[in-house]
Length: 266
Length: 289
Image (cartoon, rainbow over all chains, first blue to last red):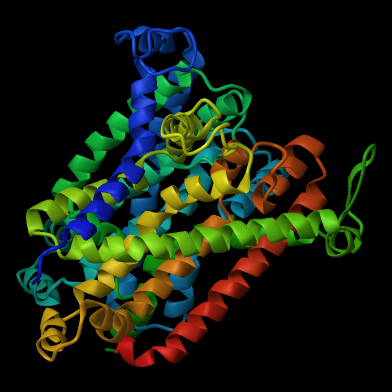
């Protein structure tokens, strides 16, 4: 294979700058010692990171976001595992339509989903509740969980399960001791990708969150609409570092490019 | 034996049942209610009036205000898609030619931002593009411009920021199709005396067009329905379809009109995506095996 020429490498360097510049500037501004938006040219300061502690609503939103992500991705995985096993193993009427339905939240704009949930939850009395947030997040992150569990379900040699059954294992034991360990990489990475997507979701959540129960990205979004200051840069910098850690963790389980290109055949 | 066969036939429905129930209850019903809502009446003092009317749809069809917003939405989406192709395709090709070590490092650089909250990424662009931002200061220091360029609250700014947000999808799609390429074909063309431009145009490009098109569909759909980035960079005046629906719902409180805008956006997008998919599949059927 031929190597990249100098022109190609220059293009690449410009591209990497383009990709990293907005993240870098957020982190740089977060360290400013001044009271206004500026680059830290006169030394670094942690004052804006300390200032985050004076805004309990951001800390509360962060805690709620973590709970929401953990809960909704756990429910999404619990629904995805049986569904993925059925789609991977059986040919049944409605299989294609069901798969399309489960993947549809990827195609429907999140604004439309947000409006639909706002309308629906207002009618059934769930608007502004944490339950409503969890239910809506389960729906939008399920495609990510399903796709990864599905990808790992296709590769299973079912003869291993048959062997377990012939040795007298109960169906529950077969699932726990044989099937689950085999699809575990897909389950773990599907859970993590679903949790990250839940944590980052803003477009749909902005419609159904209430001041009492809201998520960190929604609170940040509403804050930025009014003013942009070093405080919000410091919060964003923390998020960027946190995401970097999550990404490295995720990369351990499942190479990141496979995660997004999607290897599912269904 | 027949009992076993029946159990076998029921098994997939029992397994998909829970997810199916959740999706019927939380996707089909709410979406149907939203479509229905778009045919309801609304008054400043009466609120939502559950009477069938075409008023919202007629408003959208006749008022040039809505036409302008939808045109802007799709203009931005087209520009973002084009920018993603022009920048993303060469970048994917360069990535593919790197040594495995460097490639995995730079794939993280490309994919990583996808996982960072879109609010944080857009904040970065707001800082870069402001009239005192780095971009303007840099351009002025280089003497290229005399006065700061307006990026904030303009379509240019929204297109730049959205391209940054969505370009990873294009690179991943093109990269996936580059992986299926046999490098020997490229070498064969070179050994037969083809220049790099001819190799690109006659050998590589035809093989990765399906990847470019599927990337373009994803980028276009996400750009046309993007919310946070146009809301922050575009501000309240430069509205797109999704921020318009947001304002109708949460500021004006005219839910039926907002529902009509959302329904139209959904229908337009689904029509475009399904249409493009058909076209791609028919034209490039042989590439998809």
